[in-house]
Length: 402
Ligand SMILES: [Zn+2]
Ligand SMILES: [Zn+2]
Image (cartoon, rainbow, N blue to C red; front, side, top):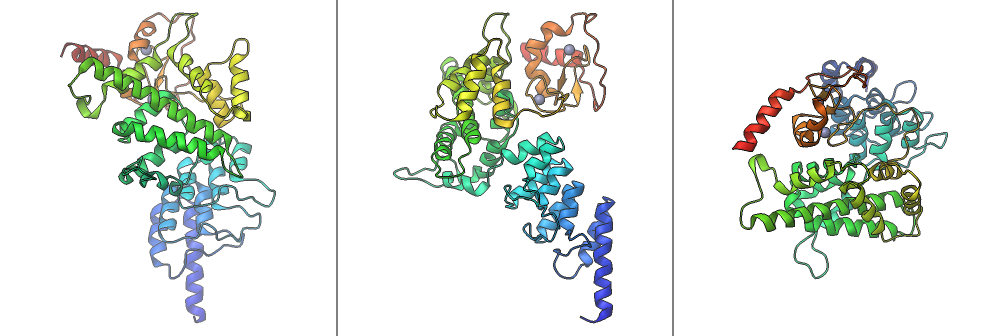
């Protein structure tokens, strides 16, 4: 390569770094097509474009670089930060997912012996911590898409591998979210195989010879339990309906609704809610009683005035949030930072209309009440469209009469 060509390349490279640092995605796209040669080049700090894009939390740029064959293990950075370390610091969970999907080793240490997840915890990016800690490589799940032993059919259809993967790595452990995921991922008709696969995954995790991840074993057991509970609802609905199809409008299943109602129903004070009840059963059925996570959960649930079981589970699996946690959650499915709220009382927040609809049977009891002794929610941040309660009521009335 003669000097002129070399200078030109260096010029393109430095412009690429510049566009990434300015989050100028269009400029970046334009330049990257002019690039001749590998995308694994470095700036003066030894950082590649991929590391810079991860650092910026720029999902689109990261995707483009990975598609162009960026090597996730290429590392000339002085402090040994992998792209995942940078993604974890950026706070963007989608970027973390992209590099995890590309096969990065989440246990890689930087020069001060910290993993990416530890770095995320250090700066309070808790969703990134959860995304990384809950991650399971897709290839580890392929086993379940092949027939094993005497069986002719696999537990999970190969076409459902992606859905199965999404289901397993979900960080929101709320049973309503789990049930909604079963529906949206198209796993609803494959519950028995899914339950068996999760049971096997739990056992396999605990029987590993090294690097046993008790927390993941407990999570798989928990997911299996919820799938089992949804199956019980399915049985009950079937028994009531006999031959009618279970699938309603828009692929909604009556037993998913039944399960969600059970979970969201709050009993009068002093009566144990279904959710509390079933989660305690779930702990009782955990087969590995010697492990730390089991003992910890049991002792927390046995304490005087224990936290709700779901809270105990969440803390056990995802860890305590190490800073004052002011995050708000969807009143229905527990998703973080929902951006809609009930237009009437403005007290409860939801991801969307569907979440509001599912919660309405409980919320209607308190929604209309005067809220003089409750300070109206002052945080109006991130609320885009309030959901019109009157409109919803009308809609529900229509549904009830049709
Ligand atoms: Zn929700
Ligand atoms: Zn309300």
